[in-house]
Amino acid sequence: MTTNDLRSCSSQTSQKSVPEMNRFGEKDIYARARAVSPYSRGLILAPDGKTVLDPQPSNHPNDPLNWSRSKKHITLFTITLISCLTDFGSAIGIPTVIPQSYEWQRPPAEVQHSLSANIFCLGAGGFVAIQLSEYFGRLPVLLVFHTLGLATGIWSGAATSYDSYLAARVLNGLFSGVAQSGGLMWIKEIYFSHEHPRMINAWAGPVIVSPFIGPMLASFMMTTTSWRWPFWLYTILNAIALVLAVLFLDEPLFDRETPNAERLDCGSRWQRLLGIPQWRSRHLRPGLLSCLARPLVILNKIPLLLILLWGYFNYAWVIGVNTTTAIWLTTIYHFQPVSLGCFYFAALVGVGLGQIGGHWLHDAIGRWFAARHNGKIEPEARLLLSYPASALMFVSLVILGLALQNTWHYMVIAVFYGAQLCGLEVAITAISAFIVDAYPEVPGETGAWLILVRTTGGFMASYIQLPWVQRDGAAVALGVQAAIGGFTTLLFLVLSFFGKQIRQWQGPVNV
Image 1 (cartoon, rainbow, N blue to C red):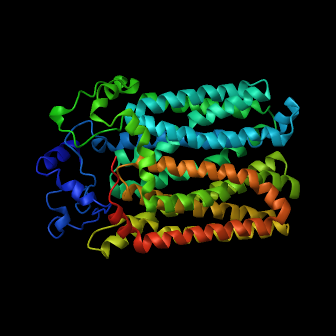
Image 2 (image 1 turned 90 degrees about the horizontal axis):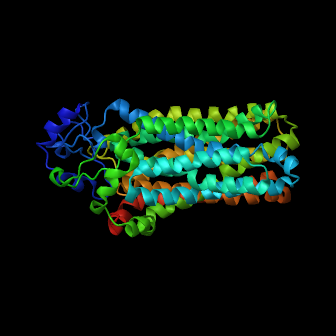
Image 3 (image 1 turned 45 degrees about the vertical axis):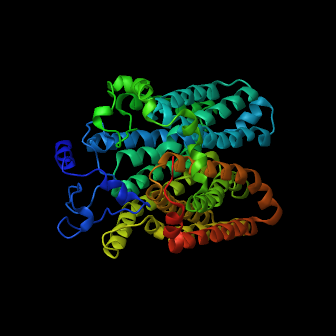
């Protein structure tokens, strides 16, 4: 459907009917036909003639929902690339610990503190970026933070002492998480609701696999070069991403409730890159203090808290396995750097299978649910795939523990290492689609909380994993982790049976 088509349809549409359709996060996006569905009367439909577009686009040419297909996809590609570099740059420091400890005459355990500090700061920095994005605009905040992330990446590779390197890694964590924390926000603002699961799946897959690509490439590179070259690679990729952002990204922040007559001139694209129109129109948005408080306001929503609790523990065990796999494989199976690098292909295969399967499964679940509920799909329907995905994660953890405890063949570890990530890819897409549909007013804030619980959970797991395994054995430690994850998955049952009633009782987010 072209922009002109949208404008002509929009002139016949009452924009005031749209919030009613959104009221408690219910998505009437699979209405079958205008003639037979009361939900589609007077509303703009997708090109298939059946799907009601939600949110309804305005007739303004700068509305991101009216962007061309190619512009939307290159925006998603650029945001995904910048998001991937967050964990790629963090995990690239895993295999560099040993050569750094030799160079600076520090114990490996002390050098590894830089990794834990970087992981923790990723969530905190991305959280602040989301708060500022609501006031200053998405695009200028992303460019500023990404530029500072590029600078601290250069500093990391050029550091001549451990203290300098530690400072660089801390600051790099603070600045490089901007796109990853805001990924859901960008997807929500440029795509329609029925497209969200597919686009979240396309964004989440590379993000999940990125912390495995980093150490894989670093392991290969360090067989012939110094530990600094992985960071130079990280710097080069950051520079490419910055060029793509400057050339192709545009401001997605758009208030459809403001009449066109009251809307300020959006300016030229280079002005939007600098944040000039965003600054001039700041009086149309909440004040700075309100924007800073937005992430805290949503914490009274029970469904969101339950999702965050699941994310904290289940992300933690995945990160715990990732940060300790290299140690297990080198000490138990005597892997060399090249063999270790090859092992990480298991992660690529696992996430790839989850992404390919999820591309169709999430849409299929939506169509199946809508066909049985008068063309309506509720946010809780997005969680259906999280049950088998979570079960796959927990079974994989148990078998990983048994394999390490009993020194089974390393291919068993590779298979279930990948299977755990396959389950994570499907589950994360499901819960991300749920929170975007349930609380469409705050996609950036909910996404930032997801990233924050992931990084804090990973920070916790990276500290306790090795001592726990050394004390109780891998079978017990990973078995207990699987049991904790299984218990938190029971929270999905609460949402599946009572989630809608809880959301109606608490009402929409007031920001």
